[in-house]
Image (cartoon, rainbow, N blue to C red; front, side, top):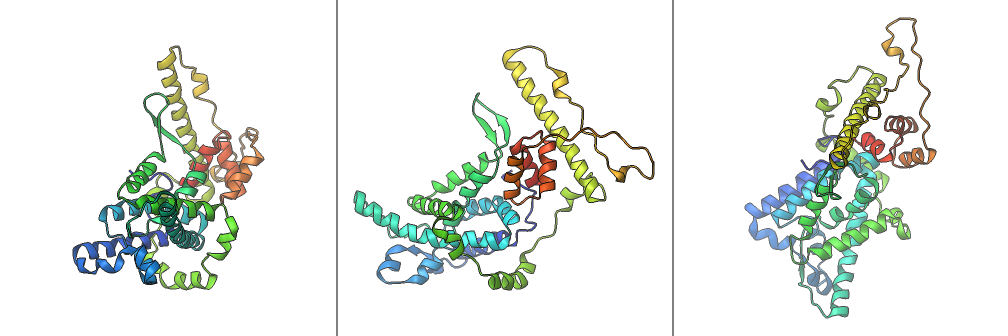
Length: 345
């Protein structure tokens, strides 16, 4: 229900899986079995600043003491696993580490700014947990994940594949009195890291030897097998056949989407449906895997002209040029549809 992008499961996302399992298990352990130990994981800014208890800065920003925050942040991490698949575990971990460090600095700055500018004294204890990096992930989610309309309600208002994620983030944003400080510091740190301000992405990054060490030790523990239910249903034996069949599936999805859109327009304005517009001739491809030794060849239609600018934008996201061209041709040069198709396959 809350999956908006990519295939289900935690395939190729060992870091996301570890962030789901370990902090959630520790939160349940502290809440149910060891409530007297929760005082060691309180995010107390005054103790950090006045008594130099740096260990509170570390412990208080890892484990959530509120189970509602644990549940919401876990769902958000599960949906944001698409960035680990796209960028790789090392770059994803560097983003989380950089935002975790930057947001700790912005927490102090925001508290001091509130007290100096408005005379508002913020409580010493801020919400605990791995919350600021989760809010920081909304920055690349907003900038790089395309919006795909799912349903339309109340005229101009529409539900997209990103609506539930924003609602979940709003729920987490309003779950506590001072969680807005952690949220704002997380968003600011996410923008600084995503926009590469002051070269923070080069300073606050995971060294290669550390990434290799955790790849050898922890990745086998938290790695997940490839979801067979999504990759094998209705798919051919070779990569070329699978790619062609997926393109044909996208053709059918586009056709159904166009039919639903035209039907809504007819209900609003009246008139007849232009069936020729709804059922354009399907692309014809030459594929030697389907010839089975026959010498006859089908006449292929000329390839659709694609925009090099859109191809470059897809290649910047990490997709190959061949996949970008195929997706743009299949989606009739619709960048949002092509990006969503590549993310889900």
